[in-house]
Image (cartoon, rainbow, N blue to C red; front, side):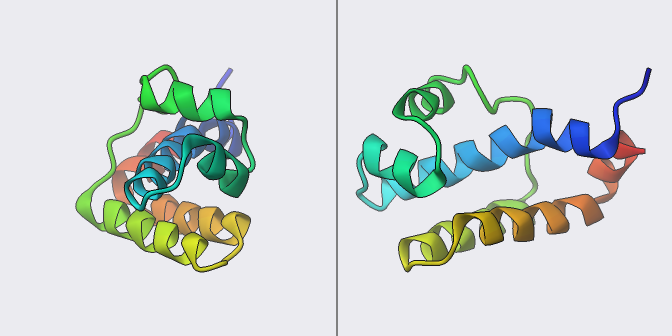
Length: 103
């Protein structure tokens, strides 16, 4: 049975977005605990992102990488993480290569 597009996103895309956000937030000087709090995940999840146990499936193109960096800056400045993740997800869903996997 094929997965629904949402299942694919939740299992494959979302962890990759969180991993990239975590990496960018850590570069800004936040601790793993602070990053976990901002992203609404556990410190253990951040550790798993950093050790490639989670979020290693998708490689994003340069445009998506820039959008994730933009979102990390926005989150640092108080923007809601859910709004930013949803914004990135909407952009990704328009990507031709990802769209082929979703359909």
